[in-house]
Image (cartoon, one colour):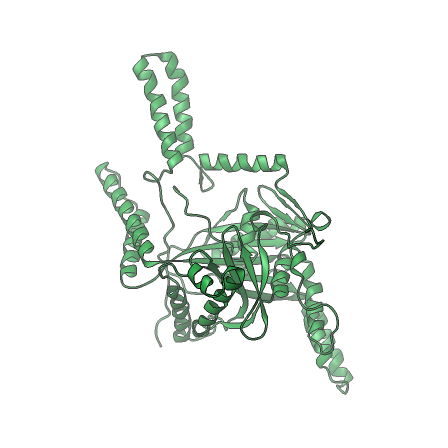
Length: 506
């Protein structure tokens, strides 16, 4: 049996316009130098009393750090948030206030950056319909499926390594020039289960001739264990860029119909790779199923009612409403974005960005503590992957390696000692470039995790528990200050909401 594989070497994106400074930071530094030189040229103490404090403030804005952001970025974010609060743009009202079309229909109504998203219906090639989330702002189409997997903790080392390597091969396949698949999202959420679906299934499958004592014992068992259970749902989302796939879309008929056909075709080609990685596709989400996933994320209290109705819809002879939710009512009735939390319908969510991964070698199961069952809270974790083509990967890694080597030489000339962190970062950048040249793929990766409660007094306890579990996993979390609504869209919804654009500067 081979040794269990370990993983490390994640590299944070760092792209300063000048060193570690962004363009605006560099401008602030230049302005500070100009203000500092004015008293020297004027030979005036009066000018020094004015210009020196201004120069110090500008330098503080350029180099100061506030919770992971530069001081200037923090101020801009705070000002934008206060303007949004003052103008009421942090509030979203749907429900009775939802807009209607000229024909009296109610379109899908989502808040924030999801406002333009619509759920389309397309044939899945097997006689059914699949729901596709269309984002006209980014011009993307996202297909979502529910998957299950046997796990890694209880399998032998060889099988574990094989599954992880197969997942890596799946990602590498999409690292090609102008590939149509621009984003892959793995979304998992832990939900408390009241046992309603289990009771409904048991009632339908219990024989009328079953011994009364056995039926009574089974009923008592479900009543005691059902409410304490926790279920996990895992979704895989694949996002197609209409811009990259324009020729294929044109050949498939053009427009939304052609884009949906190309996406379904790309999805069909992935089945073998997913199976090799140990992922079992349970279902491609239909429009109503996808809408139900969105609805439960915004209003967790709907989960129990939807689970009971979906279980009843599977019974023979059912003539009621189909399983799932009408996409027109998938969104929340109301939301409110504050600096620290996101309130949606009857729940509160706090979202975090994974800002630091373990520095030491870890096993493939190191993220497991993040979704540890908690009865007082729901947790959601999204891992977002953006494949990078070989040419762009070569350019990005070469630039990264050059910048780090230049910084090392500059520190050596100025007599500054090089820290072990800087030495390791430089070695990691070199190792990544070697791996790319050897044929490995390069992806952008981001993790976003959120905790949701239905009682406000439980929120801080749930946040503290999440931080403790993240610390056990060796992760560094940063609260999405001032952007909780955007972080919620990435962490709690499997709609393929993408990574932020590469930010200039730290």
